[in-house]
Length: 600
Image 1 (cartoon, helix red, strand yellow):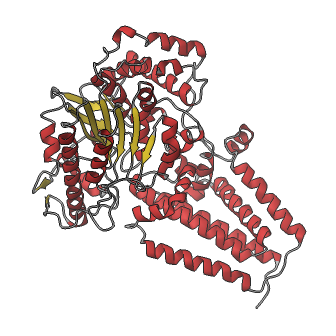
Image 2: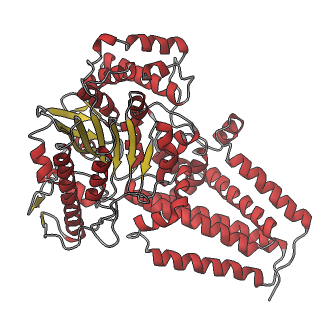
Image 3: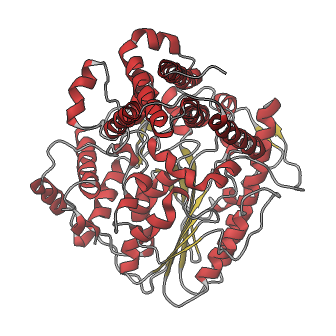
C-alpha cells in the first residue's frame, strides 16, 4: 500500500476540515429552510476562518498521534456528533447547541434515554463501537513517520488555536474578527449562528456573560434603587405560625383543552379545572418553550428574569455552579428557620442541580437515587408524579420546623409515551402522528392531574398551615402542526404568548378565595408566596411587586400587562421599573453585590 507523504496528510486534513464545516452549516440552515450555499458565497472570509480553525486542530491531532487518518476520524466523530445534536435541538427547541450544553455529556446515558425517539440507544451504541473499531484500525495501516519538527509545529499551532478559541471574547481579537465580518449577536443566538456560522458563533459563546452591563450602573444608582424600594410599612404582618410552602414545577404541564379545533373524549385536567373554582389560579408565563427547565426554575427560585439575559443563557451552568452562595427564595426562607428540601426524581447531576442547589440554600436534595417511591407509568418511563407527590408528603410529615419543598417532576418529559393500560382518551380534530402524540400526552397529564389532586387532598391533613403552588415549566414540544392549528386565528404576538402560558394554581389547607392571578412570570412567585404566607417582604420583593403590578408577564419575546394582554409599547414608568429591575439583576450576577441588603 502506498505510504502517505506529508503533502497527503495536509490534503486529507484540509479536505476533512472543509467537509465538516459544510456539514455544520447545512445542519444549521436546514431547520430554517435557509440556503447554506448562499451563506458560503456571501461570507467567504468566515467560511475560510471556520475551515482554518478546524484544519489547524486536525493538524494538531495528527502531530500528537502521528496518524492522519486517526486525527481526521476523531475530528469527524466529534464534529459529527455536535452537528447531529445541533440539528435536532434546532428542530425541537429552535435553538442551536451552546458550549455549556456539552456539560450534559456527563449524563450521557440519561441523555440517550431522553432522546431515544430521535436516536435509538442501540444504534448509538453500535455507531460508537464501530467508530472505535475503525479509529483503532488506522494504527495498523502503513503510514510514513513524520519528522519531530513537523509534528511539534502542528501541536504548537493547535495549542495556540485552542488558546485563541477560548479567548474569542477578548478585545485583542475584536478588531481582526470585525474586519472578517464577524458580528456579535449574543442577544439573538439564531441570528448569531446564521450570520457568523456555527464555528464562530459557538466559539463566541465560550466564556460569554449571560447578561450585559446596563448603562449607568454604579454604587450610587444601586443605593438610589435600594432606598426607593425599602418600605417596611408595606411588609405583610407576621403570621401566627409560619406555613409550610410547597413549590411544584410540573414538567411540560400544559392545558391542551385550550387548543383551537381540538376536543377530547375526557378532560385530562378535570381536577385542576375544578380546583381553579376553589383556589387562586392563573397562568404562568414561561421564559422558555419546549425545554430549558432549569431557566424556569432559576426564575422561580431567584426572582431574576431571563428576559434581561442574552439568548441561550443558562444561569445554572454558566454562573451559579461557579459560586458558593446566591440569594434566593430558598435562602430567605432558610434564614427564617425553614427546613429546605429539593426533590427531583431524576439524575441529580442534570443541569448541575447537585452543585447549584446548595448554592441556593437547600439543606437536602432527593433524587431518583434516594427517593422512597419509584413507580412509573410505563416500563421505560420516568418516575411518576404520584410517586413524587407521595415523597413530598413524607417530607412534610417529618420534623417540627416549617418546610419549604421544591419539587421538579419528570413524568411528562419527552419522549411522550402515554400510560400503560390506561383508559382510552381520544382526540378529535387532529390526524396522523399529531393525534397519536396528543392522545399520549393527554393520558400522561391526566395522571399528573390526579397527583396534583392527591397533594391538595393530603395537605388538608397536615396540622401546620400549608401552601402549594403548582405550575407548568413550559409547553411540551409537540408537533409544530398541532400548535399551528391550535392557535389559528391568533395574531403573532398572541400566538407567542399562548406558547409560553402554562397552568398556575395556588392551593392551601385553609380557606382561600378563588381569584385570578392573571398571567405571571415565575420570577414573581416569591412575592406571591411570601404575601400568602404572611412573611415580611424584603426590599427586592417590594421591587418585584412594583414590577408585577405593571408588567406581571416578562419574556424576551412578549410582555404581558395586568389584564393578561400582550403589551406592544411601554410607558415611561414601566421603562423605569424595568431599568431598576435589570440594574439590580446585573449587580447580583456580575456587579459588586451592592444590592445584597435588598435580599434580607
